[in-house]
Length: 360
Image (tube, rainbow, N blue to C red; front, side, top):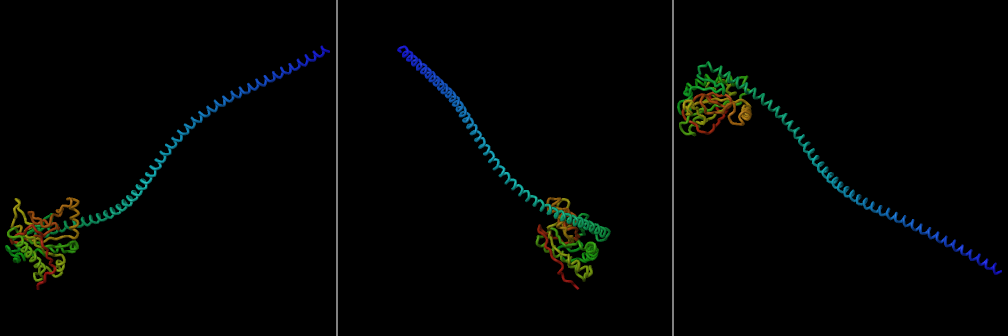
């Protein structure tokens, strides 16, 4: 019994020992599993931490790159804004230049139209110039033919058309009354002269016929001015006097519309070759003719040829050079006045002739 009891006790003891060993083994197994799990989790955690740190470093790098890109974009935006502002300024300048160009085009159009008008005017003036020069040349040629073979002892200047005669024919010295020889000269000269100038061929071109009295430099200027005026008037009066029989009534009426007289005193003397005054030649009466539009044409030629100087290709009116008389008005007829007295540097005083009363 006791053996059986001890056997049972031994079997129970053995059972519990085996059970405890099994439980210890299981516990150890769980401990190992837990340790392995914790170790694996720690490794996984460390790996995740490393990955997280890597991601953080990447984020920092990306953040820096993003900041750099933001700064780059900001710089590019600033450059773009500056370029836009510059483009806007250039657009304004372009608009201003376009407006200026349009204005210049309008001005150019206006100037072109004005140039066309001026060209037409110049062409018209050139035609007038050609016509006047042609008329003037023909007048001088006809006057030369008319008086070259006459017994009037006159000559026609080929350049000016001036006609001169002996200084003792018209007046006595210091006198203003026509001598008989002067009247004979005018009676022979004037019809032939007016037949040319007042002919149908030239009458429409004649603007004025001027009778000018000139003296030498003996005496005062005012005395000679008065004398030269009276002499010019005496010649004009004789020419327009129906009683003189020089011209018919129709010729007198035509001549009155263009004739005037003036005295020049000694302002335009005739000079000798040595520059001294030729008193005898200076005492004269000149009959000058002026063509219509000739003054305007002369000024144009002065500007074109001489830079606007007062003496153009037609000469200068009443110039005191040696020779017949260089009148800028076209041609002149010089009738010497035998009177001596002179006129000074002053200009002429014109006296219209249309109001001279007819003497029966």
